[in-house]
Image (cartoon, rainbow, N blue to C red; front, side, top):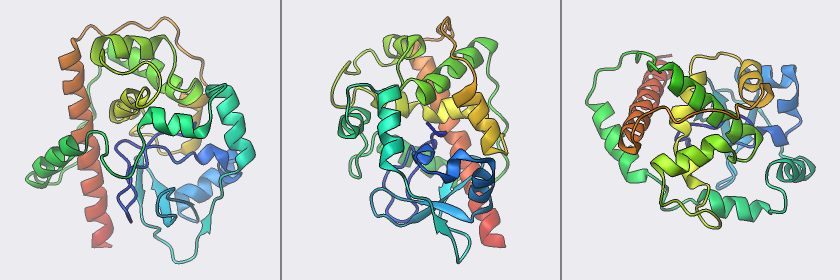
Length: 247
């Protein structure tokens, strides 16, 4: 799976776009294609309103910055391969239901609105990178690789469910939503990457960590770290929008 977008949403319809499914396109499969994506020549379409959206780094979504762009098309064959590899026996509809992806009633919408209200009252300045302990880094690395290689299944996600989301359903509707809720924290590991290929190497190609341990915090402390990561991403986006408006 291509890198998830922390609290991502379509800049046109505000629908939640946590994952672009970029790896279902031919363009994302090549170095030249990744470069064209970062240059803004290749964009994706929102799977709610179908309007074009551009992937930028640090991980975020904006309206296309160029007047002439190519919209990458997701292929059914690549989708079916992804389902076989990461979610055997399940349909795409099953995964959408399990992840809780829907246009209305977004998970954590109220909390994100509160975060944004706080951000708007703060001066715009580059946020300091999150200081992660070695235990946190190893655990989050295990999580982000499971998110991108095993369909959010594995020992790290089992620990996440046990300690931070004990009430999350095990199967069916919203059974994977807890995994996508922590994307702002897992993607803090790649916040300073400036190359999609490097992100891919880290999250999709590197080996899984099968012996990760819970980083020693309580569930409440973990959610506090998640809120901190959300504030960091919102601050980054606010600075990026300000810089773009000034051009």
